[in-house]
Image 1 (spheres, rainbow, N blue to C red):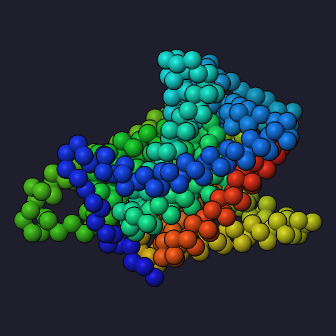
Image 2: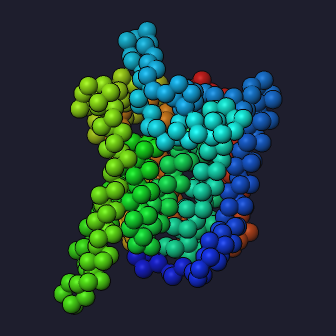
Length: 397
């Protein structure tokens, strides 16, 4: 098994050429990513023409997209009461995406919904670049390109083109993890705080900052070697990152608590949506119902899917991925599998866990380029078709 604990050095350029060089190195990954996303949109457009559905409406004005746009236009305060007694409050949605939608719509002719699409388009490219940067630093340039394409061709990859917050979150998380790999502590802390304003799973980026810092302190020999000034200078930045990382996440929880008059306000809001964390009991019951009912194939498929995810994470450990990747990917996986609620959204919740794809990227990168391209192209086409089918369904992704 490949050892990724000591990744190859990343080529760097001095001064103002650094960004240009980094972008040049990432260009194949970004072009492949853009092509994959355009294929997905093209298939969605063809499917929409046949089904007499607007691709624009499917991408920007359904399900969560509507909630984000309403927050951008009117602020928080909307509550929907369903016939079964459920209470859906817009406080369940973290604020960074609607803030950006409001800002863009205020300075441009775009509506809030279209501003959400613009944010998603730019953020998805930023996410692809960040995923490439992590993959290149850990496993080399070719593996980094393959990692980006694997992330793009996920079955639910069409969400990366929707006015949802997944692309924005993955961009912040990927660059946050990269900053940890590069030991840019303050950058990592700021990105973790912003990720915490984007989605509840921002806790995974916070955990990556904290546990990476703990691992660094545990193996730092500079105190014993008499280089205490160097150690203190870096550890001040590390301490600042540890303090900064949870601020976005905690600030929104505190604000919702103040707004609702309860310390557990955000958890109560999530409970109204039927969401929360129960250690995976509800998900296990959901799978069990299919295995014992008339949907045995679906139950077996879910078990195989969970098994595949756990196997991939075990491969990540065997490859000795760096601590930031193991922690971030592991926490995203844990939170997704132990959450209750609408189980159809689990594939989407797992989408930011790009480190789980790294073992596959390393394996595919070793193949002949033609074979790699054929495999990824075939999966990309299947993903595009599935994405169009998925968005034309009745339930939200």
